[in-house]
Length: 378
Image (cartoon, rainbow, N blue to C red; front, side, top):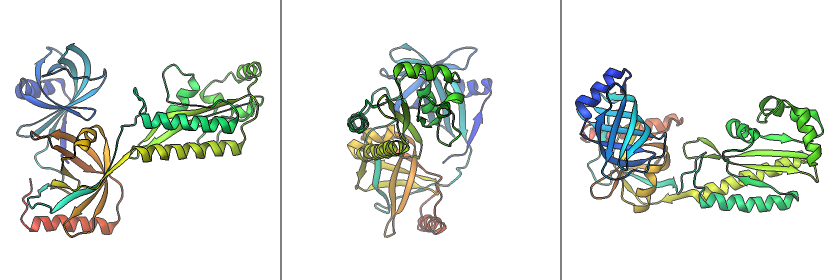
């Protein structure tokens, strides 16, 4: 992990780009996808640049592009996509320029002895699951459909299980953004629209304060109860993602607390099924190129993982020092790059999760051993 100096002034940022990077080959990363390109030109009196790829690059509007180059120091540039000027030229706005300090926060030590340090039992995701999915993964759609049928049979009324889409009523937006549940036990009672219970939406405060009109409308529609539950998926980096919602409005029966608990447990079960179906575990051993107290560089030659890993935020794996009990890590994928012979190099940063003191000491002892047997810091 590098300690970085931030350059925020417009003139200083432009100086770095104009004097060191114009017309030089530079690495680019967008959403885990890697390209080699060049900065073609700088737009005068602005912080905009035009980058050029050898081929068309399918980047979505407002995407963040991270450019990087190793000169005397490592340079990283965060750019905001503005527009495509030609099929292979993109206008970007430079938002941040970072230059590595002289020394790394944690020295890296190159592994030269084959098999000395490996990664194995690598667990990753087959499909990237996000809050705003343009293409809904099959494993998500299949489970949504299965549980929609199952819970509709249970309720005797039509259950909706779907992803959040644009154009939905405000209550859906509130459920997504707050990750809270909307439960109206009885449409005829004002208190059903008012709650201070943790984890629940207060309809009157957060959705619509004209409750009397809502109650009148519910009589016209013959509504009795309503339940709206955001479906929350926790990814490999412990980020909670609202991937969809469960929605039920009843006309025949009231939704009881027991009904509510049943639906909630069923949705938790559904999410676990999606997780299990989405995880893939590789038992192969992948060589570690270098290692430090904060991360490592890994080489992967599995064709399936070469395609999926660059798109992911993080992975779970076991780090094995030769003849030692493995260390189990959650880690963030900092960068990914393909080599000339088709292998994938990954920059891995260990997550900040707390580890037992004995594990920390044992890990540091292994690093110290590597240093003692002659590995040179880089």
